[in-house]
Image 1 (cartoon, rainbow, N blue to C red):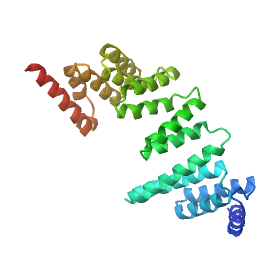
Image 2 (cartoon, helix red, strand yellow; image 1 turned 90 degrees about the vertical axis):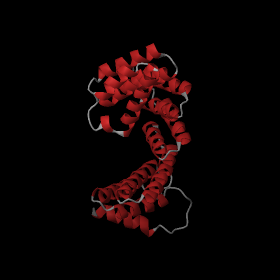
Image 3 (cartoon, one colour; image 1 turned 90 degrees about the horizontal axis):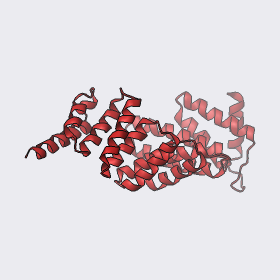
Image 4 (cartoon, one colour; image 1 turned 30 degrees about the horizontal axis):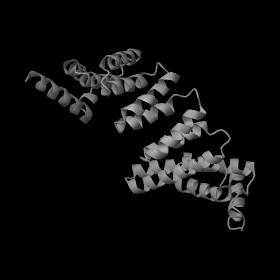
Length: 266
């Protein structure tokens, strides 16, 4: 820790020097300072860790590792604010972390995974436009990763934009055709588009890969209900384990099934 503190002292000592906003430290100073900030973070000293990173960012604004590490510290501080019940500060920290991640993306030599992290953070703070932008960059930069296209499909699905949701979930399945949540997402989209037979086949495939996953079974029940098989859907929902069976989302789905069955009997 002593070498780290000496490095920090050196950076702090020249903090007020007049110079262009470019890196004023060596690679070794950067690495040592980041390690020190992470040590403080691991010890639960959030204020000290954040202070160190703010000084480092001031002296090394274009450093990708610096900006990414700054973002990590800010996210840890956001989680701490959440636990303290300070939602406003948590949101502020996450928005600052997002800016740090975006800065890191600009100078990283290989930002593929960083694009994905940036997209997920934007998604978390409900900036869906930015989330889609960085998910798309992540998708394009890593042809073997199915996650970015999956998350884009989720954004479109929540907006009930079924055609774009279908396009992106199919992109995800091209890269990983055996991912059960992608299969169930595709099933739900096909059901909403009225392609009931295909939807139910996709749902069966997904559930067969992970037969004990109650969340998948819940999605399958929704697919069945949309496909006109409310009785079958209700049987699946009734067999779900607690606490999922008593959750508000399951209660709503059960109510929808009962409504559909009542309408059919009239």
